[in-house]
Length: 123
Image (cartoon, rainbow, N blue to C red; front, side, top):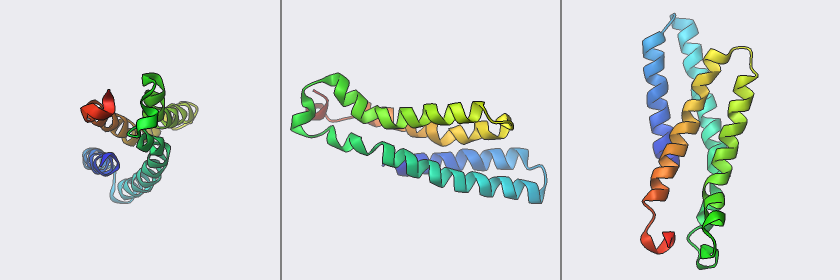
């Protein structure tokens, strides 16, 4: 659910940016296509990095809260930090800054779903 909602919200934010900036038909269309492809790959990597969150609900993993947080948030946070470091070192920082939208929408939704975990999983 997090992946789907994050994908839709990120696409919506990219669409708003594309509509607002629209510097020209060819350049704007190319930018939109690049963002679309980048969003698909970023969500794929975020999904793969969030797979350890599936083990949070198992009875064996209830022992420590810190381990549960690391399994739930470790991968997406590490991927976001890696993305931030890559974008900071890039020459065209302004355009690449928009590529953090999928990361932050995924993390925000991931946090919201963690807060809404059923009580039997969170205790």
